[in-house]
Image (cartoon, rainbow, N blue to C red; front, side, top):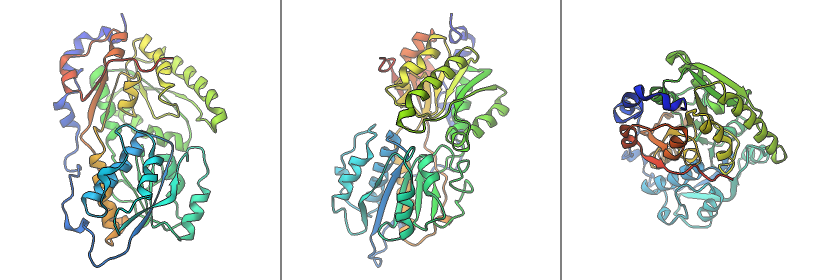
Length: 392
């Protein structure tokens, strides 16, 4: 019998990570609702239009989803119009096609999406051409940046162009901003959810009561920030589990990707023999390569939790906790842009926003492991998957 299958005495009490538990984990007062403040509406006396650029770490559904929702938020605040016609489908990772559509259309007099202002692949590409363009101060008034790596590369004092960074693991630990509440810099702002990974691990631990938690990450300042290692270590102290880590160097380019997959498979295989739960931090694998990598934990009955979210649960992780959609963060991001355009300083704007978390389970993975989630767990879930993903 698998390790998960030997836990019937805990299932009824903890396997739900249900509504009551979720409510208990949410810090009061930090959730920003839909803005109705007149300060967010365009000032009629200000005829300036804002030329916006965009950069991302890599193609990723969270990035495209956040961008599309920011655009919808700006539409709702009357900063542009026509967002409802955007060619965006939930789950898509291609932001470049969306950007081409935005930049090719007249969406009103106040916002322009610069046609050649989209930049991708900063996980491996140099940011120097972008920085030189921003230093010149010529044709971009605001940069929207997605991801920890892109944020680290562009949120610099070499330029003074307002730079808003979204979808980072921990913007403070990554050095993008100096503090949680406010950035402390007039041209840099980052979305911060300081309790996001604390909530994830607490729910995972409440569900399985693990004693040895496995993680694998690149042991560099950037790698530790991307994986939010400080949060994982803090929770180990609070909850009393042992952290078992393996280090895997991130690929340095396309030609190094297969080496990375081999090293990751070896690290995960080693961990699967030593831990009773696995917390899968953000990595450089494609979703297509994820199912065979995670299979070792399924076969050995090790529960897995995806830091990323439902995308990896659909491909073979057992569970995750993440946002249900991007509407909330889109409205929050749009409000920051509106306040900036209306004359407020980025250094003074709050950075904290969290969505009510949602739970995802993969029942096919649970069945393969010999684990049967309690009905309360399934009733509390927002996403339930019933296949092991695309297995080659």
